[in-house]
Image (cartoon, rainbow, N blue to C red; front, side):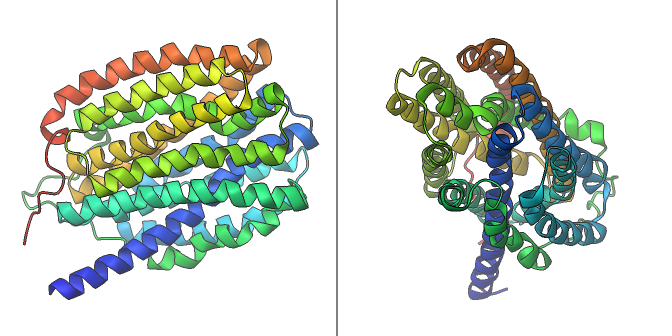
Amino acid sequence: MSAAKRSTSFAVMAAVVTLATFGARASNNMIATTIPLLAHHLFNFNGLEVGLLAMAFMGSTFISTSFINARLPARSRRRFFIVSAVAYAVLFPFYSKSNPITIWALAVAAGAVLGPIMPNIMTSAGAISDSRQRERLLTIYTLALSTSLLIGPAIDSVIVKYVGLKASFIFFEPIAALVAATAPLVRFPEEGRPTDGSARPKVTSVLTNNGFIAASLNNLTYSVPFAFITSFAGLYAEYRFHVSSSLALLLYSLFYTTSFLGRLILAVRPPYNIVRLMTLSSTLTLIGLVAAWASPTILVYMVALLILGIPHGLTYTLSVISISRTFEPRSLNAANSYFFSIMMIIGSGLPAALGAMVTAAGYQATILSIVPIVAVIFGATMFFARRASAVLIRPPMAAEGP
């Protein structure tokens, strides 16, 4: 293939990945941040009930990803992906008609159809054989995530201000529909068989791989803080600083601004030493949590969210690139699916646990309790990252061909 054709093909793939990712993540985040406010203000849910609602959403995503998507061959996965993308778009407006009972069914249904969407977009981005283009496209994928999380809350804030929490889902539908519109164009490479004739890797070989464990633990260092931020950061701002729901939602844009900048830096200057950046990410997470806990004013809290946004941008990107460096293309679907499944199963329990703590001890005590958890997970991450340093510390842009 000529250089011009390769460039055109890459540009098309990048555009599809960007649009699909933007639509999926912006709408998914809208559910995660708006539903707690809706459930609390309109349905009188307490902190524990808000956490359980998030658990229902993420738990169904885990089941769909781990037990269905991870086990399907490329052709069947593509059909499952397209059907799920359409169902996701169809379900989205029904949140505007929800009540204290149907909100649970909608959370489960939306979570289930979301299951195959993000892992397959990630696999599509990471399946390019050339390492230079692969890591560039993976960074574009994470930039699209940050862009959606930067723009989405700002759009949602304006919509909620003028039409309210329930009706905001109707006006957000075009963004959710982007997933269905681009789904048929997402690339699903054939996995084929390895040249050495060996069998496809078993689940245990993926889950016990040092690079996979390091990537999963690295992401876990931010999973606990992020679970609190998505479910309770807005409510914390309302409770402690007495801001409006519209401003509480807008605060997420500050958080995602620095997240975007962190990923943009990785796009401009791709990571060489992933282990070193993992250390930086966890350090900033700890600083941001302490700042959020001690914030005396809304301005200081805003600075804390800006700090916390940086490791949010770095952590997931570093984990995704770590997995792409660790596994060959035929193993990426399994690795990405199990990685995403681990994120979901942990994420599904965290909001409920944090919600129970918020109800029992308050917001500030909950934030402070997260600090030692992050520190312990970071120590475990470093242990496995050093064991996988042969793949995690190397020039990312070393081309495999001309």
